[in-house]
Image (tube, rainbow, N blue to C red; front, side, top):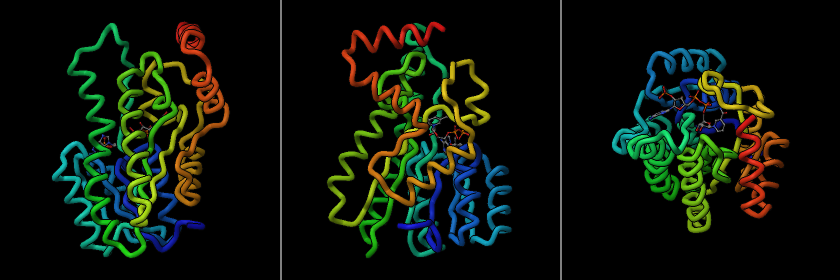
Length: 256
Ligand SMILES: NC(=O)c1ccc[n+]([C@@H]2O[C@H](COP(=O)([O-])OP(=O)(O)OC[C@H]3O[C@@H](n4cnc5c(N)ncnc54)[C@H](OP(=O)(O)O)[C@@H]3O)[C@@H](O)[C@H]2O)c1
């Protein structure tokens, strides 16, 4: 797809950060936006901006951790606009969490926040897009932290890795039905949430720059997209090294 225009685009996790910026930019392209997250007031402001820039917009406050609510969002999008052409599953959160200071419930909560929220949309979207003559694109905002276990981000790394693996399998299975899948792996992005924690953030990029990368991925539809270049190269190099070496490097980076 060259340029996202004239499409029905569902963005899950659109009330702030990367999702809100992507929604605003796609709103300038003559699309039909369906935006969802839990915070209704933020969604209402976003939807007003999108309509003002010339796109149709349906805002649907919903908790992505609730499977029925997620299925209802997909159904409402189809009832309003007839199809979902592109879905960006962007809801997620990576709290600062050391493994010597977590409860089992903490780890389960991070899994729900980053994995269940994907599954709850993936299943109804596959059903919907499988029935569409043109199929559709399902993109997920994953993370470079999903490519390996990052110190103080272990539960988040694990949840994002699980989502990537699930989507990798779906990509192979559903290609014959015209459903494409893109996993997008950002490094650190200067959103309000991330700025509020004390984690080191090497090579951090602005929310605007991250949104440009995400939209490029939606246009080009690579199976995996990585940005920024420097963090991506660092993570991919660490992955190629023996675990004893990469662990020592990560330990040294984490102690700075
Ligand atoms: N910022 C980074 O450095 C970075 C790096 C790599 C990957 N990412 C990923 O990028 C995505 C966006 O993160 P961000 O940094 O832009 O943070 P953000 O501003 O906190 O955005 C997260 C979005 O997800 C929504 N959300 C969270 N839980 C939800 C739920 N249960 N149901 C519905 N919506 C939910 C939030 O809205 P409500 O709170 O209103 O529900 C918000 O709109 C996340 O998946 C994150 O893991 C971020």
